[in-house]
Amino acid sequence: MNTRKIFSAVLLGLLLAGLSFALWVSLATQTESAPAILARGQSFLRQKDYESAISAFTDAARVNPRNPETYYLRGSAYKNKGDFDKAIADCTEAIRLEPRFGDAYEMRAFAYEHKAELDKAIADYTAAINTLQAAAYYHFRGCAYMATGELDKAIADYTEAIRIDPRAWGAGSHGMRAVAHEKKGDLKKAIADFTEAIRLDPSYPDLFYRRGRVYARTGDFDEAITDYTEAIRTNPMSADAYYGRGCVYREKGEKFKSEEDFRQASKLGYKPTPKDRKR
Image 1 (cartoon, helix red, strand yellow):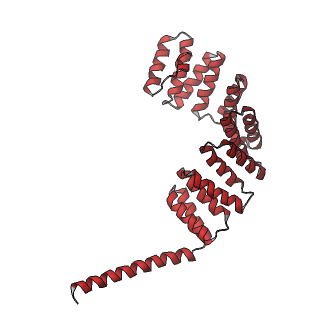
Image 2 (cartoon, helix red, strand yellow):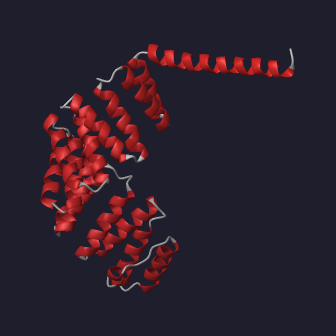
């Protein structure tokens, strides 16, 4: 057998082997049950291997196209990748198959928020609430209302989230409700909510920073300094907290401390706005 025939035989063998492997993969996918493929996809999702998760969920949808969870999970992978249009499409299909799929409405609302389509987001959060009175749905709709400037509606939703599940959502909803009160100029209620949020979760430095900012607005400079200092202790990279404390020291006439905090804020990248300079 000459060299050309040997080469042709080897090439044919490799080609047949490749076809056999491809056929095996195809058959394996076809014979693997949809729940097994779904479980594999969920494993990839937990590992943050979103491309592999999407591939597995697509295989699962091919085997059983009537399972709404498959589209929801694939939508979750797309959402985590930042592909919000595909996430919306998959959630829409999940909802078509199961019109009372609350989490699918919630995820689609999240995607709409990231596309700045807030009216659609609010409509979907409302649809989710209509399927289940869940604290999470109220909290997230409150955040959407905050983004549209509808502060009273935001406050009402955060209040409902706290009522339904104060353990899981107390700190977050109290904190966000405090921000809404601050925006409305109701500083006493803002301080009360920040204080309750801190009691529930004292590990979150932004709460101290925000309460310190409100104390500064009320003229309670000592309490403001205490909160800014705690925010800095728990997050030494907080340029906002250094700048805020610097402003309070300046109001108290403590020039050296004020300038030192402003220098530290600048080192951390803080760039004062014209509004800041007037404080």
